[in-house]
Image (cartoon, rainbow, N blue to C red; front, side, top):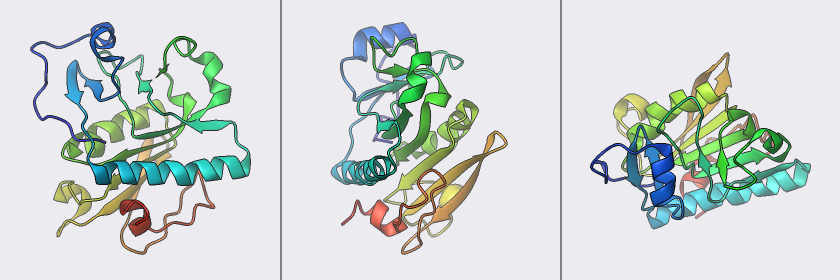
Length: 208
C-alpha cells in the first residue's frame, strides 16, 4: 500500500458516490470508512509493485490464463459501505467480469470472486495492510494476499523484533488467512503461481 496521510483529508465522511465525484479521475486516492487517503508512493514502493506485476504477468502469459493485472481500478465491496480500496497489485479473472455490473462503464470491481491474487506494498500506513485488509480481503474470498513490507515498517506484533523487511503470504483457508512470512533468501511458495521462483529479498528489493 502506498503512503497515506494519517489524518483524513476531508472534513466529513464521504459516501462512495461522493468519492467518485471528487476523486475517481485520480488514482492517488482510496476510501476507507468514509475517509479519503491520499496515496503518494515512494520510488522504492513503485519498484516493488512493478517487480511483482512483471513477474506475475510472465506467469499468467506462460500458463495461458484468462487473467490480467488491474492497473488503475477500485475494489468497492458491496457489503462494506463507504470503502473503496485501490490495491497495488490485483490479478483479475476475465471470465468473472460478466458478473461485475459496474465494469462495462467504470474500472470498479465489487466481487471478491473476480480477484485471484492481491498484493499491497507497505509504507507508513501499515495498519491498513496488516489488519484491515487482512480481514476484508478474507471476507471477500480472495485466495492469496501478499503484504510486501520492504522497509520493515509494520508493527512488531506483525513482523517481530527486531523489525526487518518481510513478505507475508496470506493463504485463504476456511474463510480466514493463514499467514506465512519470508525474509532474505527464503523462496516464496505461491499457491496461485507455484512456478514463481523468487526469494523474499528479490521481491522486497524490487529485483535490485
